[in-house]
Amino acid sequence: MLAAEFNREGHSIVNHHTYVFMGDGCLMEGISHEAAALAGAWKLGKLIALYDDNGISIDGQVAPWFVDDTPKRFEAYGWNVIGPVDGHDVDAVDGAIEKAKMSTDKPTLIVCKTAIGHGSPNRANTAKAHGEPLGGDEIKLTREALGWPHDAFVIPEDVYGDWNAKADGELLVNDWNQRFDAYKAAFPELAAEFTRRMAGELPANFAEIAVQAVASAHDKAETVASRKASQIALEFFTAAVPEMLGGSADLTGSNLTNTKSTPAFRVDDEGAVVKTDGKPGRHINYGVREFGMAAIMNGIALHGGYIPYAGTFLTFSDYSRNAIRMAALMKQRVIHVFTHDSIGLGEDGPTHQSVEHAASLRLIPGLDVWRPADTTETAVAWTIALANKNRPSALLLSRQNLPYAPKQDADVITQGAYVLAEPSEVGLKKKAVAVIIATGSEVQLALHAQADLAKLGIPVRVVSMPSTTVFDRQPVEYKKAVLPANLPRIAVEAGVTDGWWKYGCAAVVGIDTYGESAPAGVLFKHFGFTTENVVATVRKVLSLKK
Image 1 (cartoon, rainbow, N blue to C red):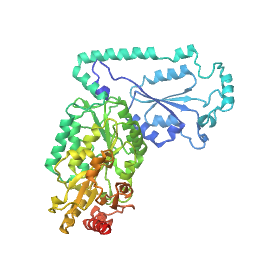
Image 2: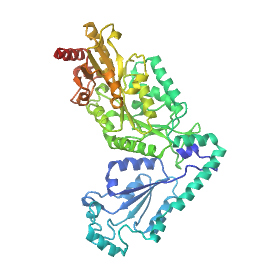
Image 3: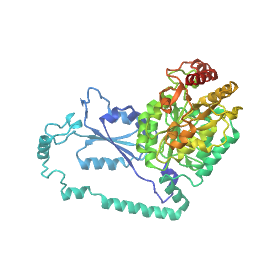
Image 4: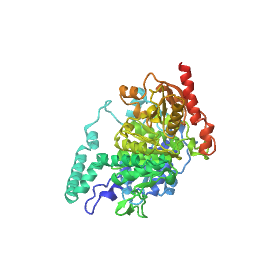
């Protein structure tokens, strides 16, 4: 895609191959199917995978549990298959790689037949060579079998010379730099844009665009589902940030990850990227492949040049979890759009209704999790997610419409939690005696409860906490200002209650069971997400305090 976007006639600045090394265990994992099938569909001619076909895994010979005809499997995906070749023969492998490079419209699998523990008299072709040290005696025998007379950690000069690629590497780097200088002279604006994007820097006017997105949301004060609020924000950002590369796992119409600026990504029969108005498509149809989608986004982020984001239902984040965790571990800017975030999705029932997922995602170190309550919070969440160069983000969004929550200052949203409403805003000129903390769709519930409590002469503060993970990183002084130590706290969220006790809550209105199949309104009432129940919970907490 970068090549299609930036290369010009006589100037090929993006023209490299990507190599994968994989074994039997890799091919047993389900994600290998998801990723390989997409690679074939996209005709990734510059992808070369070397399969270490040694027939051994940790439990032993794989034949009893791995009987796939791997070459035919990859041919069925639309791959070019070479081999098997002798994986211990350097010339044979090198020849296969050169042959693979000739493929322009198919990715290539090179099947390399190898013996695990090659050279070890007693461990070769056994599981012991897979997961155990050879040990001193076996190392000695292996040295003798291989004819290796050198001491441990000693590399002979001729071997070192064969492997030392520094000089060749410097030549390649210098050659590319010279070609890029020529490109820069011919296309200075394109060169500057390429340099910016590969450095991971946002456009110079990003802050201005973010202000426009947030201000527009605040001024219009629309009542829409937060998934729609996300699409509204994306219209601003995708138009101004050309490196944003969206997608969805077969749920585009539900996740609303597509915009006017992101036509569908497509390739033609020869594997060339199809362009719309002279540019590649920027919205990927990943199909029903949540894990593959999340892992591919990690790869895109690691490569550079694009900021990947994509959507699925929040419940299906379970499929993606390993890749989400890896993005956090690798500190990559990957943005997950998870819609249908609670029992509020309605009749699809408990298999699709997220209960534990928000709390579970919040446990991943280094992942920012946002559950915005309205259009402004959603625009801020997108702003922070895009600005976080070294941190992935997950946006948890509603299917159902959410009324706009009036607020005086949008800047405080960036701190993860803020005071949304004091008692004075519902006509009660008293200091708060309790704090209701809420997220997402339950913020409106908290505001209604505040109003009803005011009628009873009970003043409470409402705190919206769209991101617990961001709030947890704030200075102690700010956290104390938002959640005063002397006020009892009641949390309200349509999810499991465990994560809220760390905020010193006296009570939590939550759901620690699975949902049911019914309209959203019926479910919220059934599970106690009503103004009356929140009011009763606050009054009970205050009565116990006396």
